[in-house]
Picture 1 (cartoon, rainbow, N blue to C red):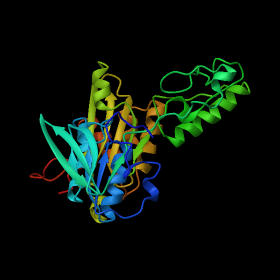
Picture 2: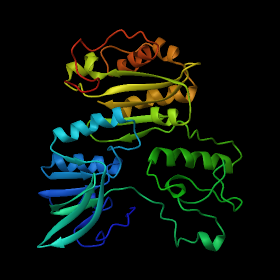
Picture 3: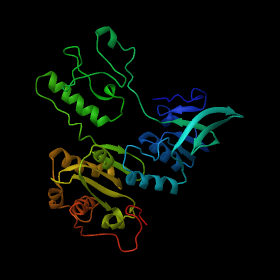
Picture 4: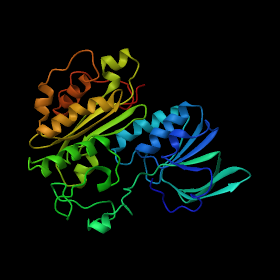
Length: 329
Protein backbone atom coordinates (compact mmCIF):
# COMPACT_ATOMS: atom_id res chain seq x y z
CA UNK A 1 0.00 0.00 0.00
CA UNK A 2 1.12 3.53 -0.78
CA UNK A 3 0.94 5.73 2.32
CA UNK A 4 1.07 9.50 1.72
CA UNK A 5 3.09 11.71 4.09
CA UNK A 6 0.15 12.68 6.28
CA UNK A 7 0.83 12.98 10.03
CA UNK A 8 -0.92 10.32 12.10
CA UNK A 9 -1.42 7.64 9.45
CA UNK A 10 0.75 5.25 11.43
CA UNK A 11 -1.62 5.30 14.43
CA UNK A 12 -4.06 2.53 15.46
CA UNK A 13 -7.39 2.56 13.66
CA UNK A 14 -5.85 3.52 10.31
CA UNK A 15 -6.00 0.73 7.74
CA UNK A 16 -4.70 0.15 4.22
CA UNK A 17 -6.31 -1.75 1.36
CA UNK A 18 -4.43 -4.84 2.59
CA UNK A 19 -6.65 -4.98 5.69
CA UNK A 20 -9.81 -3.49 4.17
CA UNK A 21 -11.31 -6.87 3.21
CA UNK A 22 -10.80 -8.31 6.70
CA UNK A 23 -11.80 -5.56 9.10
CA UNK A 24 -14.06 -5.90 12.12
CA UNK A 25 -17.34 -4.13 11.80
CA UNK A 26 -19.04 -2.80 9.88
CA UNK A 27 -18.08 0.54 11.37
CA UNK A 28 -20.66 3.19 12.09
CA UNK A 29 -18.48 5.81 10.39
CA UNK A 30 -15.46 5.46 8.12
CA UNK A 31 -13.20 7.96 6.34
CA UNK A 32 -11.70 6.80 3.06
CA UNK A 33 -8.65 8.78 1.91
CA UNK A 34 -8.24 8.61 -1.86
CA UNK A 35 -10.98 8.31 -4.48
CA UNK A 36 -9.28 6.38 -7.24
CA UNK A 37 -10.28 2.79 -8.04
CA UNK A 38 -9.49 1.48 -4.55
CA UNK A 39 -11.20 4.33 -2.73
CA UNK A 40 -14.35 4.25 -4.84
CA UNK A 41 -14.69 0.49 -4.59
CA UNK A 42 -14.27 0.32 -0.81
CA UNK A 43 -16.45 3.39 -0.25
CA UNK A 44 -19.23 1.66 -2.19
CA UNK A 45 -18.78 -1.66 -0.33
CA UNK A 46 -18.86 -0.13 3.14
CA UNK A 47 -21.77 2.16 2.28
CA UNK A 48 -23.75 -0.95 1.29
CA UNK A 49 -22.92 -2.49 4.67
CA UNK A 50 -24.58 0.47 6.40
CA UNK A 51 -21.47 2.47 7.26
CA UNK A 52 -21.61 6.24 6.96
CA UNK A 53 -18.68 6.83 4.61
CA UNK A 54 -16.80 10.06 3.92
CA UNK A 55 -14.64 9.94 0.79
CA UNK A 56 -11.74 12.40 0.50
CA UNK A 57 -9.98 13.25 -2.78
CA UNK A 58 -7.34 15.92 -3.21
CA UNK A 59 -8.03 16.38 -6.94
CA UNK A 60 -11.17 18.11 -8.31
CA UNK A 61 -13.07 14.87 -8.99
CA UNK A 62 -13.31 11.28 -7.84
CA UNK A 63 -11.86 8.69 -10.26
CA UNK A 64 -9.32 11.33 -11.37
CA UNK A 65 -7.90 9.21 -14.20
CA UNK A 66 -11.28 9.34 -15.96
CA UNK A 67 -12.97 12.10 -17.93
CA UNK A 68 -15.13 14.38 -15.81
CA UNK A 69 -18.43 13.32 -17.42
CA UNK A 70 -17.64 9.67 -16.68
CA UNK A 71 -16.55 10.29 -13.09
CA UNK A 72 -19.61 12.45 -12.47
CA UNK A 73 -21.92 9.46 -12.93
CA UNK A 74 -20.20 7.52 -10.14
CA UNK A 75 -19.95 10.63 -7.95
CA UNK A 76 -23.69 11.16 -8.25
CA UNK A 77 -24.42 7.50 -7.50
CA UNK A 78 -22.13 7.60 -4.44
CA UNK A 79 -23.94 10.60 -3.04
CA UNK A 80 -27.32 8.91 -3.60
CA UNK A 81 -26.05 5.99 -1.51
CA UNK A 82 -25.22 8.38 1.32
CA UNK A 83 -21.47 8.71 0.79
CA UNK A 84 -20.17 12.15 1.75
CA UNK A 85 -17.86 13.03 -1.14
CA UNK A 86 -15.17 15.66 -0.52
CA UNK A 87 -13.27 16.60 -3.71
CA UNK A 88 -10.59 19.24 -3.97
CA UNK A 89 -9.88 18.41 -0.34
CA UNK A 90 -6.49 17.90 1.27
CA UNK A 91 -6.21 15.75 4.39
CA UNK A 92 -3.83 17.56 6.73
CA UNK A 93 -3.50 15.07 9.57
CA UNK A 94 -5.04 12.39 11.73
CA UNK A 95 -5.17 12.26 15.52
CA UNK A 96 -6.78 10.14 18.23
CA UNK A 97 -9.24 11.67 20.68
CA UNK A 98 -11.46 9.78 23.11
CA UNK A 99 -11.36 6.57 21.09
CA UNK A 100 -12.23 8.32 17.82
CA UNK A 101 -10.17 9.24 14.79
CA UNK A 102 -10.15 12.96 14.04
CA UNK A 103 -9.40 13.86 10.41
CA UNK A 104 -8.24 17.41 9.80
CA UNK A 105 -8.79 18.56 6.23
CA UNK A 106 -8.78 21.68 4.07
CA UNK A 107 -11.18 22.54 1.26
CA UNK A 108 -11.25 25.83 -0.65
CA UNK A 109 -9.02 27.47 1.95
CA UNK A 110 -11.17 26.48 4.91
CA UNK A 111 -10.14 23.88 7.51
CA UNK A 112 -12.48 21.43 9.21
CA UNK A 113 -12.37 18.30 11.37
CA UNK A 114 -14.38 15.09 10.99
CA UNK A 115 -14.74 12.30 13.58
CA UNK A 116 -14.75 8.64 12.52
CA UNK A 117 -14.47 5.14 13.94
CA UNK A 118 -11.69 4.25 11.51
CA UNK A 119 -9.76 5.49 8.49
CA UNK A 120 -9.01 3.60 5.31
CA UNK A 121 -6.05 4.89 3.28
CA UNK A 122 -6.65 3.93 -0.36
CA UNK A 123 -4.46 6.27 -2.41
CA UNK A 124 -2.86 3.45 -4.40
CA UNK A 125 -0.26 0.70 -4.44
CA UNK A 126 3.49 0.64 -5.00
CA UNK A 127 5.87 -2.04 -6.19
CA UNK A 128 7.33 -4.10 -3.32
CA UNK A 129 10.78 -4.66 -4.83
CA UNK A 130 13.12 -3.61 -2.04
CA UNK A 131 15.29 -6.14 -0.21
CA UNK A 132 14.38 -9.09 -2.42
CA UNK A 133 17.83 -9.60 -3.90
CA UNK A 134 17.67 -7.40 -7.00
CA UNK A 135 20.70 -5.38 -5.90
CA UNK A 136 22.78 -8.53 -5.45
CA UNK A 137 22.25 -9.67 -9.04
CA UNK A 138 22.52 -6.16 -10.47
CA UNK A 139 18.95 -5.62 -11.71
CA UNK A 140 18.33 -1.89 -12.14
CA UNK A 141 15.30 -0.19 -10.64
CA UNK A 142 13.85 3.29 -10.61
CA UNK A 143 11.18 4.96 -8.49
CA UNK A 144 8.14 3.09 -9.80
CA UNK A 145 9.75 -0.33 -10.14
CA UNK A 146 12.06 -2.63 -12.08
CA UNK A 147 13.44 -1.20 -15.32
CA UNK A 148 12.88 -3.26 -18.48
CA UNK A 149 13.19 -2.75 -22.23
CA UNK A 150 10.47 -3.21 -24.85
CA UNK A 151 10.93 -6.99 -24.55
CA UNK A 152 10.39 -6.87 -20.78
CA UNK A 153 14.04 -7.85 -20.24
CA UNK A 154 16.00 -6.21 -17.44
CA UNK A 155 19.55 -4.91 -17.81
CA UNK A 156 20.72 -8.38 -16.75
CA UNK A 157 20.60 -10.65 -19.80
CA UNK A 158 18.08 -13.46 -19.47
CA UNK A 159 16.25 -11.87 -16.51
CA UNK A 160 12.74 -10.67 -17.33
CA UNK A 161 10.12 -8.89 -15.25
CA UNK A 162 6.38 -8.38 -15.67
CA UNK A 163 3.39 -6.96 -13.86
CA UNK A 164 3.05 -4.73 -10.83
CA UNK A 165 6.78 -4.91 -10.02
CA UNK A 166 7.34 -2.62 -13.02
CA UNK A 167 5.07 0.20 -11.94
CA UNK A 168 3.00 -0.64 -8.87
CA UNK A 169 -0.35 -0.33 -10.65
CA UNK A 170 -2.49 -3.33 -9.74
CA UNK A 171 -3.92 -4.51 -13.06
CA UNK A 172 -3.95 -8.30 -12.94
CA UNK A 173 -4.85 -8.63 -16.62
CA UNK A 174 -1.92 -6.46 -17.70
CA UNK A 175 0.43 -8.43 -15.44
CA UNK A 176 -0.76 -11.71 -16.93
CA UNK A 177 -0.42 -10.45 -20.50
CA UNK A 178 3.07 -9.12 -19.80
CA UNK A 179 4.09 -12.43 -18.23
CA UNK A 180 3.09 -14.32 -21.38
CA UNK A 181 4.93 -11.78 -23.55
CA UNK A 182 8.05 -12.03 -21.34
CA UNK A 183 8.11 -15.83 -21.68
CA UNK A 184 7.58 -15.57 -25.44
CA UNK A 185 10.45 -13.09 -25.70
CA UNK A 186 12.68 -15.31 -23.58
CA UNK A 187 11.96 -18.14 -26.02
CA UNK A 188 12.55 -15.89 -29.03
CA UNK A 189 8.89 -15.92 -30.12
CA UNK A 190 8.37 -12.16 -30.25
CA UNK A 191 5.93 -11.40 -27.44
CA UNK A 192 4.22 -8.01 -27.54
CA UNK A 193 2.15 -5.78 -25.25
CA UNK A 194 0.13 -2.87 -26.65
CA UNK A 195 0.24 -0.35 -23.81
CA UNK A 196 -2.11 1.94 -25.73
CA UNK A 197 -4.85 -0.65 -25.32
CA UNK A 198 -4.96 -1.69 -21.67
CA UNK A 199 -8.49 -1.73 -20.21
CA UNK A 200 -8.92 -0.39 -16.67
CA UNK A 201 -12.01 -0.86 -14.52
CA UNK A 202 -13.49 0.48 -11.32
CA UNK A 203 -15.85 -2.03 -9.73
CA UNK A 204 -18.18 0.38 -8.01
CA UNK A 205 -21.84 0.63 -8.90
CA UNK A 206 -22.18 1.82 -11.52
CA UNK A 207 -18.95 0.36 -12.86
CA UNK A 208 -16.41 2.15 -15.03
CA UNK A 209 -14.53 0.48 -17.88
CA UNK A 210 -12.06 2.49 -19.94
CA UNK A 211 -9.47 1.74 -22.61
CA UNK A 212 -7.11 3.79 -24.78
CA UNK A 213 -7.00 7.57 -24.63
CA UNK A 214 -9.44 9.61 -22.59
CA UNK A 215 -10.82 12.82 -24.04
CA UNK A 216 -8.64 14.93 -21.74
CA UNK A 217 -5.52 12.92 -22.65
CA UNK A 218 -6.20 13.30 -26.37
CA UNK A 219 -6.77 17.05 -26.10
CA UNK A 220 -3.69 17.47 -23.90
CA UNK A 221 -1.67 15.68 -26.60
CA UNK A 222 -2.94 18.17 -29.19
CA UNK A 223 -4.98 15.59 -31.11
CA UNK A 224 -7.87 16.74 -33.27
CA UNK A 225 -10.67 14.45 -32.08
CA UNK A 226 -14.35 13.72 -32.36
CA UNK A 227 -16.32 12.58 -29.32
CA UNK A 228 -19.50 10.51 -29.34
CA UNK A 229 -21.49 9.84 -26.18
CA UNK A 230 -24.69 7.86 -25.73
CA UNK A 231 -26.64 7.58 -22.45
CA UNK A 232 -28.00 4.32 -21.08
CA UNK A 233 -31.20 6.25 -20.33
CA UNK A 234 -32.02 5.79 -24.04
CA UNK A 235 -31.04 2.09 -24.15
CA UNK A 236 -33.85 -0.48 -24.14
CA UNK A 237 -32.09 -3.12 -21.98
CA UNK A 238 -31.13 -0.47 -19.43
CA UNK A 239 -34.71 0.76 -19.29
CA UNK A 240 -36.10 -2.77 -18.95
CA UNK A 241 -33.73 -3.64 -16.10
CA UNK A 242 -33.97 -0.21 -14.43
CA UNK A 243 -30.23 0.43 -14.79
CA UNK A 244 -30.39 3.70 -16.70
CA UNK A 245 -27.48 5.55 -15.12
CA UNK A 246 -24.38 6.07 -17.22
CA UNK A 247 -23.18 6.30 -20.78
CA UNK A 248 -20.84 4.97 -23.45
CA UNK A 249 -18.24 7.40 -24.75
CA UNK A 250 -15.98 7.02 -27.79
CA UNK A 251 -13.01 9.18 -28.81
CA UNK A 252 -11.88 9.10 -32.43
CA UNK A 253 -9.32 10.84 -34.61
CA UNK A 254 -11.19 13.68 -36.31
CA UNK A 255 -9.68 13.06 -39.74
CA UNK A 256 -9.43 9.28 -40.05
CA UNK A 257 -12.23 8.32 -37.70
CA UNK A 258 -9.98 5.76 -35.98
CA UNK A 259 -11.12 4.92 -32.45
CA UNK A 260 -8.46 6.18 -30.03
CA UNK A 261 -10.22 5.22 -26.81
CA UNK A 262 -13.49 4.89 -25.05
CA UNK A 263 -15.22 4.50 -21.73
CA UNK A 264 -18.32 2.87 -20.36
CA UNK A 265 -19.88 3.91 -17.08
CA UNK A 266 -22.98 1.99 -16.18
CA UNK A 267 -24.27 -1.59 -16.13
CA UNK A 268 -21.75 -4.30 -17.12
CA UNK A 269 -19.12 -1.65 -17.93
CA UNK A 270 -16.24 -4.00 -17.08
CA UNK A 271 -17.60 -6.48 -19.65
CA UNK A 272 -18.60 -3.99 -22.35
CA UNK A 273 -15.17 -2.33 -22.36
CA UNK A 274 -13.74 -5.49 -23.95
CA UNK A 275 -15.52 -4.57 -27.19
CA UNK A 276 -13.92 -1.13 -27.08
CA UNK A 277 -10.53 -2.76 -26.41
CA UNK A 278 -10.89 -4.85 -29.58
CA UNK A 279 -11.79 -1.71 -31.57
CA UNK A 280 -8.73 0.17 -30.28
CA UNK A 281 -6.41 -2.83 -30.76
CA UNK A 282 -7.59 -3.41 -34.34
CA UNK A 283 -7.51 0.28 -35.27
CA UNK A 284 -11.23 0.24 -36.09
CA UNK A 285 -12.95 3.39 -37.29
CA UNK A 286 -16.22 4.89 -36.11
CA UNK A 287 -17.82 3.72 -39.37
CA UNK A 288 -16.69 0.14 -38.75
CA UNK A 289 -18.01 0.13 -35.18
CA UNK A 290 -21.30 1.67 -36.36
CA UNK A 291 -21.60 -1.00 -39.09
CA UNK A 292 -21.18 -3.81 -36.54
CA UNK A 293 -24.57 -5.34 -35.66
CA UNK A 294 -25.33 -5.66 -31.95
CA UNK A 295 -27.94 -7.97 -30.47
CA UNK A 296 -31.22 -6.47 -29.28
CA UNK A 297 -32.11 -5.77 -26.53
CA UNK A 298 -28.63 -5.48 -25.00
CA UNK A 299 -26.47 -2.93 -23.23
CA UNK A 300 -23.98 -3.36 -26.11
CA UNK A 301 -26.32 -1.45 -28.41
CA UNK A 302 -25.11 1.68 -26.61
CA UNK A 303 -21.67 1.13 -28.18
CA UNK A 304 -23.28 1.10 -31.63
CA UNK A 305 -25.22 4.25 -30.78
CA UNK A 306 -22.09 6.02 -29.45
CA UNK A 307 -20.37 5.32 -32.77
CA UNK A 308 -23.37 6.77 -34.60
CA UNK A 309 -23.16 9.83 -32.35
CA UNK A 310 -19.51 10.17 -33.40
CA UNK A 311 -20.73 10.25 -36.98
CA UNK A 312 -23.50 12.72 -36.19
CA UNK A 313 -26.40 10.40 -36.95
CA UNK A 314 -27.73 8.69 -33.80
CA UNK A 315 -30.83 6.51 -34.13
CA UNK A 316 -32.07 7.00 -30.59
CA UNK A 317 -31.68 10.05 -28.42
CA UNK A 318 -33.05 10.97 -24.98
CA UNK A 319 -36.55 12.48 -25.13
CA UNK A 320 -36.80 16.26 -25.24
CA UNK A 321 -36.67 17.72 -21.74
CA UNK A 322 -34.38 15.04 -20.31
CA UNK A 323 -31.53 16.15 -18.12
CA UNK A 324 -27.85 15.58 -18.79
CA UNK A 325 -26.96 12.32 -20.59
CA UNK A 326 -26.06 9.55 -18.22
CA UNK A 327 -28.12 10.79 -15.26
CA UNK A 328 -30.67 7.98 -15.40
CA UNK A 329 -33.48 10.37 -14.47
